[in-house]
Image 1 (tube, helix red, strand yellow):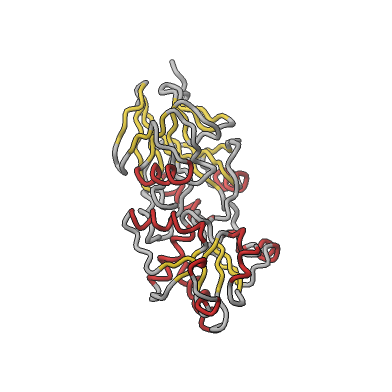
Image 2: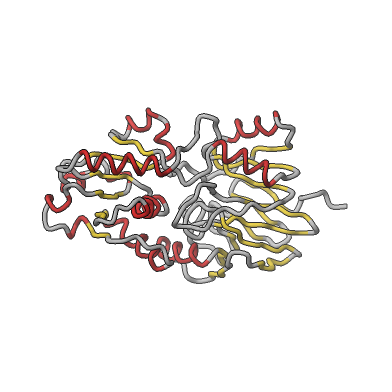
Length: 335
């Protein structure tokens, strides 16, 4: 008799669905891949065939010029993978197009979350709690110290800094996929309808979000500003690497901010020279991770992509079967 769940195998380069011979978020090119979302540590070019949501496929085409072999899976759609395995894509709430993948085989259900969060986000579909037998969860912020504040509080800090410094601009470092668009959308929700200036590296992804029905309001490129003075009293959004780059010299007395869950760690803010740390994360915090495990209530939890040990210990203390995986190639993003 085949051992339970022997058909899904964690390996160093990713999770292998053996009967269908397909990989989930593999760290190198494979003949067939299921991709949870478009961040570079999960989505890579070169696969023979890629199955993902339409938005993730569009992001991959933009970022990695992948077009051949793309198979679109809408949320809630079930696809036969072969070998008696089916896959259903469910919202993960991480970024546009991000998905959990529900795999079913021989009456057994496994969910791979990819990256996810539980907080509301106007730029992507919310996480869908779905019962399963094995729950494979990320643990990027899998330490009790990581509790993310309400995003309205952090956006309030950003707008207050802008009001208090009318002769400067507020330069916000934000990851180009997901974080930048979320910050913009939350600023709009808070009533900020003025021009937001963008680093050129942000433009294409912001336009892709708008093409997928995520309105972002009046956006202009810093390179198109007639003068420094045109940006005084405004918010500028750029990749984190640009905060202290020569590029920032074209801005009017910028006050540097950064939007990241890692801004909870003061040392990281100091290391980057950030004056206004904004604790804004697109990952689940400790409370969301533990709450989600409780709500999904799996027979066993597999933990990966981050601080595995603390979440493993929490599961043990709460009489929940769990194991830590040792996958390679999944890095801390600027979140």
